[in-house]
Amino acid sequence: LHQNSNKVSKCLLLMSDLGHCEQALFQQLDHNRDGVVDVGELQEGLRSLGIPLGREAEEKIFTTGDTNKDGKLDFEEFMKYLKDHEKKMKLAFKSLDKNNDGIIEASEIVQSLQILGLTISEQQAELILQSIDTDGTMTIDWNEWRDYFLLNPATDIEEIIRFWKRSTGIDIGDSLTIPDEFTEDEKKSGQWWRQLLAGGIAGAVSRTSTAPLDRLKVMMQVHGSKSGKMNIYGGFRQMVKEGGIRSLWRGNGTNVIKIAPETAIKFWVYEQYKKLLTEEGQKVGTFKRFVSGSLAGATAQTIIYPMEVVKTRLAIGKTRQYSGIFDCAKKILKHEGMGAFYKGYVPNLLGIIPYAGIDLAVYELLKAHWLDNYAKDSVNPGVMVLLGCGALSSTCGQLASYPLALVRTRMQAQAMIEGNKPMNMVGLFQQIISKEGIPGLYRGITPNFMKVLPAVGISYVAYEKMKQTLGVTQK
Image 1 (tube, rainbow, N blue to C red):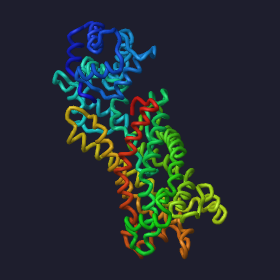
Image 2 (cartoon, one colour; image 1 turned 180 degrees about the horizontal axis):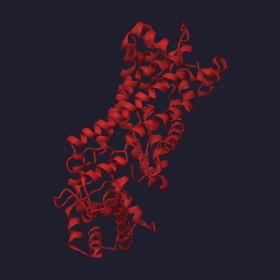
Image 3 (cartoon, rainbow, N blue to C red; image 1 turned 45 degrees about the vertical axis):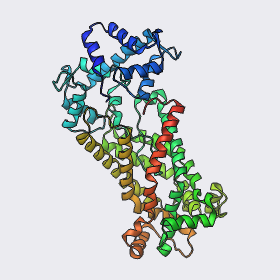
C-alpha cells in the first residue's frame, strides 16, 4: 500500500462537496491549463502531490478513465473515474468491515486476509492500519479509507493486498513451481493470457541465456560419476572440445518449446483443482493452494514428460548423434519403445511435493519475517524484496528435491551410457550412495545454483519489457 499524501486527505476532509475537490485535483494535474490531462501530466501531477504510484498504476488510472480513447482525460472523464472508483472502494470497505460498525479494526483485516489466502499476525495488521489511520484511533473509518485509496487504481480488496502475489515474472528454469494466480478482473479483461505470454517469453529468454549452465548440470549429473573428477571448468572444456561453442546450447530448443504447453496446462488444471477443493464463494488458503499447485504440476508434467526425456538425451548426446528434436524422439521410439519416454517419471513426480511445499513454506516465512521486521509505513514489499524472496524460496525447493531430480536424469539417460544396466529408482539411490556417498546425490548442483541469479535478473527484465509490449497494466 503506497503512503498517501496529506494534501489529498485534507482536500476531501475540508470540502463536503466532492465535486469541488475533484475540480481542485484536476487543476493541479492539468499543468498547462488546457482543460485536459495526458498521461505525462497525470504522472507529474501525482508526484507533485507526493503520491507517486508507479508507472503501471498511473497508466491503469489513465486507460480506465480515458473512456473515449483519445489519449487525454477531460474533467468529465476524470470525475466519472473517481465516482466509479469510489463505489468500488465502498464495496471493498464493506467487505472488510465484518461487523458492519462503520470502522475497520486489525482483527477484521486478519480475518479478511485469511479468507484471501494471506495469513498475517495482529501486529502485521496494525502496520496496515497505521499506514491509513490519520486520527490515531488505530481504526479506519470510511473517510480515511476513501482518502487513502482515492487515487489508487485497485478496484477491490483482493487487488489491494496482492502485493505478495507470487508471480513476479521470474523463471529459474524449473518446471515444478506453483502456477500463477489471477484476479477475476484480470481474467475478464484478458490480462491473464498477456501475463502468461509475457512470462513464457521471458522464460524462453532466461533459459536460453543460462542454457550452458543447465547443460553442464545435466552432464555432471550423468557423467560426473564415471571419474568423479568432472568440475565446472573441465565440463565446459569437454563440451566445447567435443562440439564447439554451439554445443553449449544443445537441448535448449526442447527446454524452450515445452514452456508454452506446460504453462497452459498447469494454469488451466490449477484453476480446476482449486474449484474442486474449495466450496463456492470461499477463497483458496495456503494449504489448498499448495495441494492444487502440486496436482497441477503433476498433471502438466505427466503430459509433457516425453519432452523432458528428449531434452536430457539431446543435452548429453554427442555431435551429430541427433539431427534435432524429432530425430531424437524418432530414434528413442524405434530402439527403446514408448516406455522410454517415461523413464524417471516416478522420481520426477515425487520431486514435485518437496519442491512445491518447501518453496511455498519458505516464501511465506520470508514474507512474515519482512512484515515483522522491515514493514514500517507500508506493507508493500517492493519488487526487489519479492524477487529475492522468490529466488531464495525456489532455491530451497530445488535443494530439497535435487536428489530426486538427479536420479530422474540418470534414469532418462541410462540407455545412452555404455555398460550401464537399467535400474529402478531405489536401485539407483542405493548405487549412488554406496559408490559416491551423500554428496553424489548433489552432483551438478553448483552450476544449478550459479544460474539462479542471472536467470532471475534476465527473466524479470524480459518480463517487464514484454508487459510493456503486450499492454499489461498490472501484475
